[in-house]
Length: 343
Image (cartoon, rainbow, N blue to C red):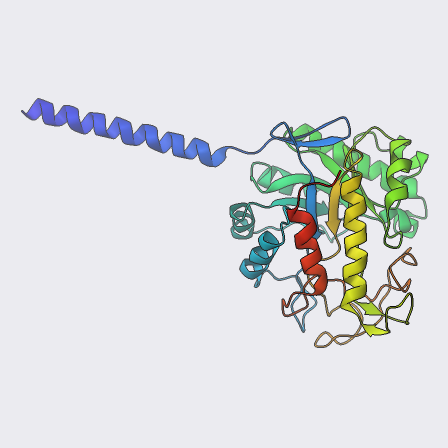
């Protein structure tokens, strides 16, 4: 009787131990991301980025905060967003876990000089890669954001940036075999950029060609056989002047119409373009004046192609406003992202 009891205890322990191991293994399974030709593959299936750029700075602040993360993720899921692009690393496992639980992927950006905070200049970026490379939220790593517009940051020689970027990509490859490395380039890269950056797997292009980026897809096809996506595209909801039938001032219809046309172009060219990270999810009041209120204006490089006034009003780019009220563009994103890919 005692022996039978002991055997039962031992068997129960073995079953529980095995179940625990299986559970642990399941938690450590990380989606495999790789590139094949001009495609991004997630677990060997084509992955189309239906993304949004995300920099949640609260009203009255200059600093990124995830205090609205739960609400923001619910809105993103409602809109069919599957990818979040951030400009700097998120060093908070709780935030990463919540993003993963919501079923979204992250494009994690690294800056060149961020005072040693996971940046490329200090080399500390690789610490972040190794810390989080096994986190299931990561889609791929991204180096810089349209730094080609700023040779003055690199001793007035942009080749210094391309060299640093290429070396950083090589180091990531040596440490992480499960995620590609991208860059976010301002517009179409030239032959110098491509020649000096062989370790870049995916090219993100920040493109503002009014409301139709179609021309860049053919240009890319003739330039490279690597995957590309639009790392920024979109329109703001403020018209500096009246133009093309859109009245001056706050104008959500202008933003919605431009967003519809841009996304239609992206999805009609899916054989070349791996998707888009629409700029942006939420309005940001820190960019052009008083952080407690909306201000027209602001500045961004190479932005004369912003629809429909040729002017970037930097605080009005969100598909939701600062209080998370949905703009007209939100419903366009939801329509486009949730529907079948257009042929």
